[in-house]
Length: 476
Ligand SMILES: *Cc1c(COP(=O)(O)O)cnc(C)c1O
Image (cartoon, rainbow, N blue to C red; front, side):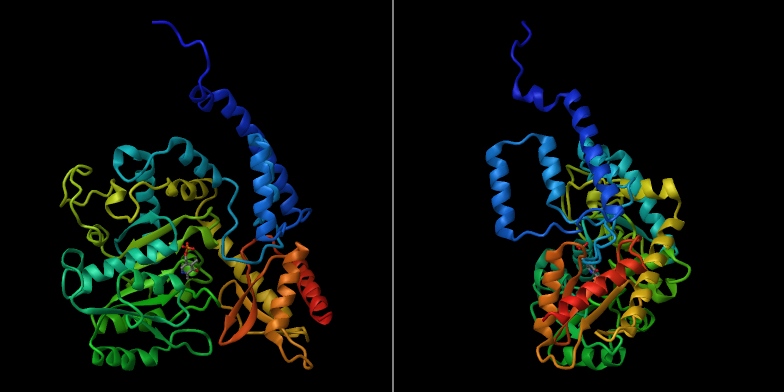
């Protein structure tokens, strides 16, 4: 046999020297960018319109740029979450050790669903989720990592149906009209989960909130009765810890009592705010969380991990294995036994990334106190910002934040159409590229919304933000 004389494309694609070189280049580019972002020496959002963005990438494609040119272009065209002017969405700011977990996962491509294709990640996943079960206060419990709060909430609702629906929906399809109860402020993914599960509009019972944007627990009993009268079978109640729009924490103790009394599944959507279990100062916000049958917590919100990194925790160790019981014996040792080391038995995903590695890297490098520090810093920044807004004549604060989310709006007595003005000044702000905030509609009014996710956002940054917003408003 003679050795091949020409280098095939495949040989090039697996050339380790190229890998080493590209890796060094990418790390250097990223480090340079991070330095600029953290020092506020660059734009937080290099805003362009969708059409401009598409045209740019079409041109890049035609130019056939090198990988390092592509790296740089992607950096130049992305929002910088490490910039302290980033106060927009709820995506957290990754600790700089964590992305290496993503790189490891991508290179190793261990699918994690079955033990032999994820020995390390299944072991780490067990440790990380057991640790988080202890933090929420479960006596035992078990969990797994999954790709985002959305999928975690859907999986929790499927577990609820498995446990509480009168018939075996998994085998026989729907007989009863099932329903779940949530706060009107719940994340839209719970509404979507209910619809995916065939419950329809009637099946998602939205309980109004009080002035603090918390679920009105006084309405739980009458609304449950109304649902029964309509022929619905309520299987679950989900609490917000905290809610997406305002970061408000529902009264979990009251929800626990209610669900216990009526034999409902109790789920806590702690995607954003479940992280407070790591803070001695703030964990009182989730009193009663240990009564929940399931809890979803995103590590990529306040826990410094790259998106998406989510844990779904179950109070009873055997429950996560019941959700997706079906025949797949070719993959697993035995269909009936609960083998924790095959994470795919419990997750929606078959193949998934090595999510636990990111969290493990943070935990072992810095210790678990870092998560408490992160939560405390972000909450404190929100309190500072709220105080500044209260003093500022041009702004109205929606409510005192319980977490790190602050909603407010620009106001002036002579303005009629404040919704339009607030939308306009936000758009201008983003196009000015120095600060990034979002907007939301709350009780029919347009608000400016900040999720204070960056631990380095300080009073000066907040003062600058308000100065810019006020001057944009005054020009309207
Ligand atoms: C972010 C969020 C979700 C959705 O989670 P993803 O990780 O974005 O899929 C669900 N619920 C709440 C309360 C959230 O804040």
